[in-house]
Length: 307
Image 1 (spheres, rainbow, N blue to C red):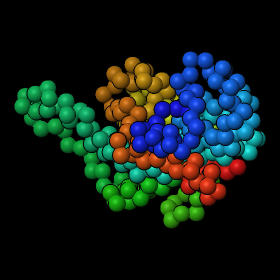
Image 2 (cartoon, rainbow, N blue to C red):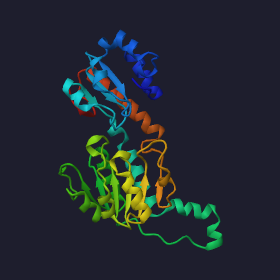
Image 3 (spheres, rainbow, N blue to C red):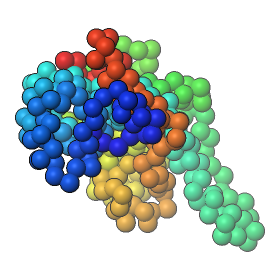
Image 4 (cartoon, one colour):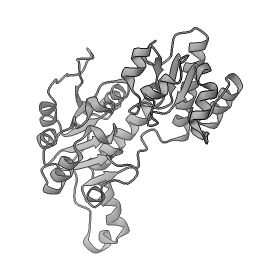
């Protein structure tokens, strides 16, 4: 298992025999002693679960992930074994949607530069900050229409944005579906990425997509750094072929490319989409709730891959 929030950890300690692989001085020795008896993993998505680990756990029935993403998991190996997999998307969807639209508004209204305008004394020396563009009424393209994408769309509608979306398949919801990413970008003022990470979405937001968004466009990433071609994004931002970016995730975390951090037209957040006490507690609680449901014979609450 991996560390979790105090209340969730207390529940695990009360209801289960815990084997702390994350704290083990000798992982192999722990697996030799207990691996054959382990029926569940409480996990976080950036800690690898691969075929080699699964081979050491012949009785494993369920992996309950306390994050939305599970990029480091070998999902093919998990599926081949018929192991159930759950995640915490429902617990963090609203928080990440809030962050996505917060970043969009900050990037669109150039709020980082406005803050600096006040702090530096430029307001007193040089007068009013340059007029910005209205956020309400803009065209928003959402890349990914899963649990979080739908929450972003719901909130965006409340804020007066015109929403369309791309997804691997039409979700059949009451929003315009655009199967071509470049077309969606060209038709959008703001593009928000909220797809899962992993090999299947590596570089999905390509240089061509960003250039279709254009010199007045804003790209917001609350997905994973891997879903955008970061080299192409940096080049487009530097040249003005892309207007601005607001980023919660990066290809190299926690040390983003210094070319990004040097750009005036980039708003930066340290991967804090779900980063509140309340939401992290809810995510950890859902991780335990899924385990409890499985062992009580009830339906899983947030299955990604049923057994």
